[in-house]
Length: 215
Ligand code: TMP
Image (cartoon, rainbow, N blue to C red; front, side, top):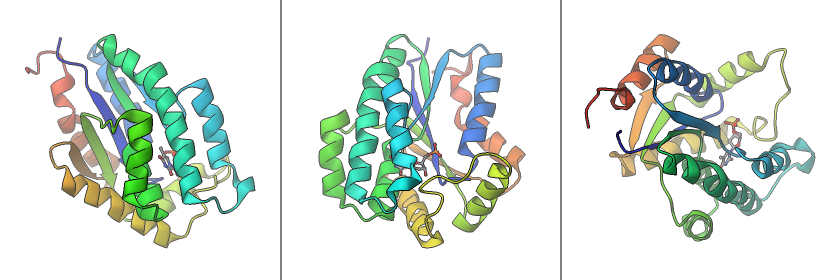
């Protein structure tokens, strides 16, 4: 069996990454690929509790460094309890968001300095990075509209959904500059068009996971 891969799906809220992750699960499972699917913040009982605190609107404006500490506390538990054990069992791990989200949201979005993020990252994960990251890219205006449409009639907004578009522009630029800095790890997928186009790009990016795809 090929080496199990740690693969993340990243992008703005409303970029379609989570629904494409669900579709990906379906076709990988149908092909008999063994994988674990998880997400951040959360992915463990403790992480879900932290997620609840992180997204709660009652706190109003939360300092970027406080956000940083919350997401890395969740992440450490997630690595130890879920991600590393799944990889050790030989399962690929498909994870909705990881540290790139922190670099984009708390770093580029909130302005937390990179050296500070790296310090906490070193402590929490030893600067761990995924093997491959699919970045679902689209303009924040489109992402916002889609997010609103998808939420219609469901749950209300969370603390970060209420951020101004300027925040999301910085987050998008943050993601794109991470992708530019590590072209070997990132696959940037234009998710502004029809879902089928995006899905085809996802299938191409993960084709080597299928049985018989070769090394
Ligand atoms: P989700 O809606 O994709 O589950 O993500 C929840 C929110 O948390 C989303 O607005 C992005 C934000 N977030 C951060 O700000 N920093 C992080 O490190 C992570 C993982 C998520």
